[in-house]
Length: 241
Image (cartoon, rainbow, N blue to C red; front, side, top):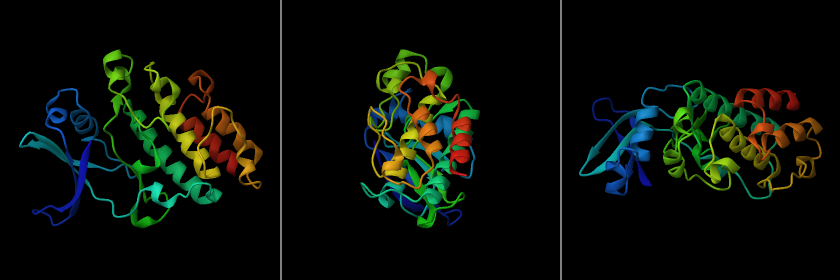
């Protein structure tokens, strides 16, 4: 979709990240991800969300000026088949949940939660260093019921909810499914399959209650998931306490 550069704002001297789109047509379209991302995120401020500072177009290419977060994304700290310990995994998941809840309070769905879109300032894991980024697929929940908007939603198939893959109506339980997928991967070192396999096969010390929480979050029918990311996060915290 685009390239991200580190730059310096001349008026302040602060480091920023600039996301520049590759294709002219993508920037020009009124319904493009660039315009949607800049419109939805320009006024949203949250400690676990990368801030958008400015947006514009030059030479037919759209660009976003964003908060610069020095550090890796979560994917670079994950190894296939290697589970995370419960405490750091819980910190990452709770911070990601806080970011999603902030979006949902504004009626916005992220729809592309995955390890590559979770940044860790300084490579450290804490409640204040986890940052959710890349809002190119973000959409207002009120608009997620229309087929025109749904056709544009093409996130990572590995983390997106079944209803998102099949062009069905979306709500915050779609983001919840992605969060549950990330949680399962952190606790086991692998992605969940269609048939749920206990996380205790990877870490025998994990509580049995965690399986109940994750299995509900990964339900293919959103009706059987918790009603909100907030509810899921509370259940996850209780299971790990």
